[in-house]
Length: 366
Image 1 (tube, one colour):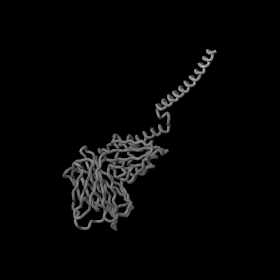
Image 2 (cartoon, helix red, strand yellow):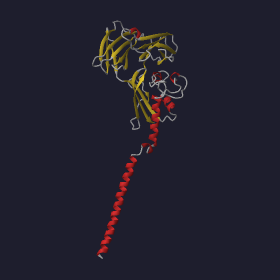
Image 3 (spheres, one colour):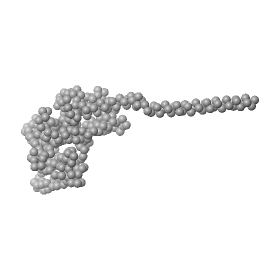
């Protein structure tokens, strides 16, 4: 009997062991399944994320790897084009003339919705694009009389700088080439006279070139009395025939008595007179075009100034190639990047007209 009881107890113990073993087995099996799933490629778990990654790649290619179609779409102002792209055809550079078309402050600027619609019928994503120099330059000046002050600061030391001050009548009243010191600073003075300053814009423009040959540009303005909004807008592009000219197209409300365009650019030492080019149109229509000399490559700044018969004035300025940044107030695309995990950030160093820029593209599902 003892043996039978002992055997029965043994049989009961085996049943408990089996149940515990099954529980342990199920737990281990579940863990193995979870761990296995964690190693599966995400595209098999979330098809929406994978689809957006594909879309982000396509959008990035349009901005950085495609010239669009037709390849000279940047000169088509009145008709739609087939595909969007910022690449300069036949090169790996970005095209300054195409970037001019996405400057939201420029004439003939492509709207955010227009670019989205060209890239996707569904418009199911958002983007933001910035184009900035690799280092910074800050320009400040005063109109104190009889001597004004000039202060330039660069984020790197020992930069060559070209300084221009443009008066309200578009006269280049100061042209100077200098160098920032070991701390990146440069200060000087210039004569402003004792006579009352004329009404209008005084514009201070600085080009800076670091030891590696990279450029940065800044400008600032001081205004005597109050300007009038004349609806003045402009776009700066290289002439379509690539003949060393900048084509500056303008629009205004048609009330101007004169319209003047000036282009400023860095010059070789001793050639100050060749650092700017100007043209004036009297009694302009509301749409006018200037063709002014610019360097074959490199950077420049274009200014357009309008006057009315009653003494009103207005001025517009653009850097070419156009920089797009929050500081300049001309970000391309959405002004705000959402704070979400799905946001893709693509950062590249690019060449535009033999100048080097940092371009940042944000893309997100919308």
